[in-house]
Amino acid sequence: MNTQQGAPGDPLFANLSVLLVEDDAFAIKIAQTVLRQLKVPYISTAKDGAEALDVLNSGTQRFDLIVSDWNMPEMSGLQLLKAVRMKWPGMPFIMLTGKASPEFVVEARDNGVDAYVVKPFSPAQLGQKIAAVVAAKAKK
Image (cartoon, rainbow, N blue to C red; front, side, top):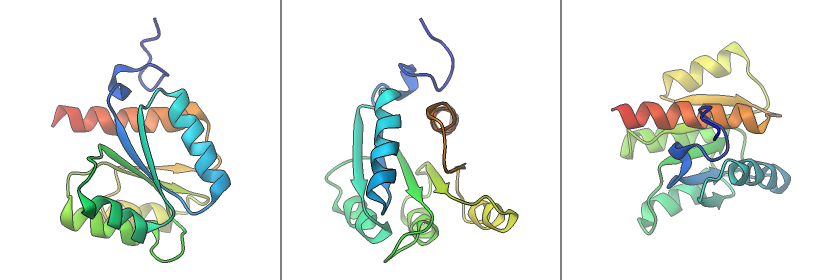
């Protein structure tokens, strides 16, 4: 039995519902594959922040975690993060980005991001970030 936090089959992922927000079809497929490898059972997608907000506001599904790209048309990941923090302040939020400049990190942290993952990422890297964020929420 694998007990490493963030590993596939981790009990933290057993009932996890994730909203994956990404505008690039290839990146969505990669992230979905990673989430499936981690045995995350519920994965919904949105093509940008505006669509993600529509999904969240509809209230038809509950989410435990948002994983969002930073750079997207319509509404960026940062704009989505700000909107989520206003309406759902405790919602765990992980940002995906192709760049990890100090300015990015500071801006994301200042706006309440729980974690960020630099693309390209390995399944282990994403899994560890998800596990850490979900475990932190469970302790609250």
